[in-house]
Structures are given as C-alpha cells and as structure tokens.
Amino acid sequence: MAPVAMRLAAQSLSDAQPVPFWLEDPGKPGALPALTGSERCDLLVVGGGYSGLWTALIAKERDPSRDVVLIEGREVGWAASGRNGGFCAASLTHGLGNGLARWPGELATLERMGERNLDAIEEAVGRYSLDCDFERTGEIDVATESYQVDELHELYEEAARLGLADGLELLDGEAIRAEVASPTFKGGLWDRRGVAMLHPAKLAWGLKQACLDLGVRIFENTPALDLASAGGASGGMAVRTPYGRIAARKVALGTNVFPSLVKRLRHYTVPVYDYALMTEPLSAEQLASIGWKNRQGLGDSANQFHYFRITADNRILWGGYDAIYQFGGKVTAEMDHRPETYLKLAQHFFTCFPQLEGLRFSHAWGGAIDTCSRFSAFFGTSHQGKVAYAQGYTGLGVGATRFGADVMLDLLAGEPTERTRLEMVRSKPLPFPPEPIAWAGIGLTKWSLARADENGGRRNLWLKTMDKLGLGFDS
Image (cartoon, rainbow, N blue to C red; front, side, top):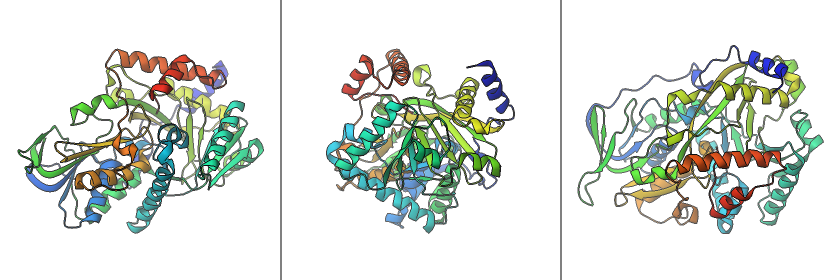
C-alpha cells in the first residue's frame, strides 16, 4: 500500500466506533428476563438468531396450540444475525455456481424453493409489520478483471441452458458503471429479484416481537449448557441452563457458529471471522458522483471478495475480503476487531470509489460466522428424532435460515416432505480435519485463493484437488 493511500485510509477510520452499526439503532428492544427454575414445553428452540426465531415463529404458525420456548445465551440478534451485511438472498446453495457443482439434478427445485422462501420472507415482513428497511432491489455480481467477465458470461449461459436465467441480466462495463460508478468495474450479472436488502438487526428484533405476539415464551441471557435425553423413546429431552432446566418433547438447535450441543457435529463447521466498515451518510453531491439509484447489493467476483450495499440513510457498508480462521476454531471476543483488516478494507474502498475521497467511516466491526466445506447449510436429527439441527450457512443465513427452520420442523414432525427428500437435506458436507491439519489446510487454501486472484483466476493443484473432493473454505 502506497504511503499516501495508507495515510488517507487511516484518516478515514479515525472516528470509527468499534461496534456494529446495526446494533446501535435506537429501536433496539430491552432484554427479556433469564430463565429461572424448571419449565416444560412442546418445542424448545435453542438460539435467538434468525435460525431460532424463524423456527419458533413458523412452529406457532403451523400449530398455534403448540407451547414453544426459545432461549438465547445473550440477547436476540446480538451475534451474526444482527451484524451482517443485510443481504437476504433467495439462493439456498450459496449461489448458482455452487449449486450446479453439487446438486445439478435438483438445482431447478432448489432455485424454485429458494424463490418461494424469499417471497415468504417478504410476505412475513408485511404480515407482521417488520420495520426492517426491506428493499427487493437485487444484487450485481461485479467483474473487476477481464477473466471474471468471461466467467459471468459462462454462468449466465449455463443458467439460460437450464431455464434459470429469468431475472438475470448481463451488464457490460458501460452498463454497470451507469448503475454504480466505479472505474474498477468491467462488467456484471444483475439478479434483479433474487436478493433483498434489509436492516439485519431490525429483522431479528421484529421477528422477536412477532414470536412474542404469537405466544412464544422467550428467555434471554439463558445459554444452554447441555442436552440430554429425559429417558425413553417418549421421554423427551432436557436442557440445563445456568439457573434452571427445561424439559421439552422436541428440540430445534439454531446455534450455528457456537459449539453444537450435539458434539458429533462440531467438526462439520469452523468459525470464520468476517469484517465490515460503515461510512457516514453520503451528501447529495457524493451520491450523485456514484449513481446507485437502483440501490442493489453488490459483490465482486474474486475469491477474496468484497460485498457492499447502500443503507436506508445513504451510508455505504463495505465488508469482506479477509476471512480469518483462528487456530483451534476458537470463538473469542478479541477476534471481533482487527485494525489491520479495517485499514485494508478502507484502502480497497477508495480504490473502488476514488470520487469519495474524504468520506469517513463511522463504524468498524467483525464477528464469527460458521462455514462448512460445501458452503451451504446441512441438516439432520439426533436422539431418536427428538432433536433437529441446521447449521453451516456460510454467510448466506439471512434468507436461508427460514428454509432451514421449515426443514427442522419437517424433520421433527417425522413426515417426509419435498424439502426432506432433497439430496441437499439428506447429505452432509465432509467434516474438517482435526488440528493442526485444519489450520494448515485452511492456510494453504487461503494462500491458493489469493494466488488465483492474482493469476487470472487460474486454480493451482491444491485448489483443483479440493474441488474434486468437494472441500472448500469461504465466508
């Protein structure tokens, strides 16, 4: 990084608050009391992020008489659900390319289900009056290198061949710069309907209130300490908490990045730290200089990619690029901030938007998400079908967690559905190896991905081998 560019990037960060922008909203609700004593319920949901909230809400929609309890270790939406970029995608497979590589035979079904799932989220926003800045403006995959333009054309042609190109539009360099003005943009693929922008924390808080209104009992600052069978095939399950115990006929686990209460699942995911910046609001002149009138989400096409979007009050969120794995898969608060990554992101921002020089960042934050080797969620049951889980969303959980909630409830009901018959639902990703092999393998993968970005997208022998084995690392 040139000294002048580094100095300007550092200056832009001088007032940045080290907290997630979304969670500072004045509409944040107060915490609910912790669980004390013993409780019983029909369904216990563990986790107060999107996964748990959608599960509790849909459970009550399906059967209003069902007694549902949700417990959250801190406050609803405090973790990945409240601090992400606010991209709510229809894709259940982490994009069309990943779906084609893994489930080509059922991709059309997965795409249809994903579209239906996003429609259902939009309907829920209206039905429950969820004030979450929902805008279904789509997303553009941006090419910043010539080889990426070719890759986007190939992806579009493959989608067209499969009849999945409805709503997709290829943009050449002039067309994409007419949408969002950056000298680095060479082309793009605009998915006009498949992605919505929203305020992630407000969505979580709105779902919390909707659950309460339907009669879900929610206990915050109530971590689940262990999970055990209450005895016998019909005996249900028991979860111990710091101040009490809950007996439940069925349990749905929405703990995602945090260690699963089903210990055999812990090697299927690793925590990856992702970081983001938020600018101060843009002036009218600054807005005019970049265009962005259609307010799409954007993400570049590199392996080490950036995601960026414009907020309801005309700030720009800029995140991604670094995906940090800590030896041993630790989840620690110390990793939530990484000044060297913030500096790198700021420099990249002004390379993308040089016309915004002088703009300052108001917030800088990071946090852990769960990633699995196939980049998309996996599902299953334990304890004779009395416990269901969904995890491994790998950064696409804002939308896909609602689908995962439906899957968990289907599995707990024990009745086959179109969802539970999917190969995607019936199969598992390959687990990550133990340490120190995981650390070494992830490090080599990250190095190889960076090299591919520097060498026209050409993948080395390590990446080609990983592709054949169905393994990967992403955020």
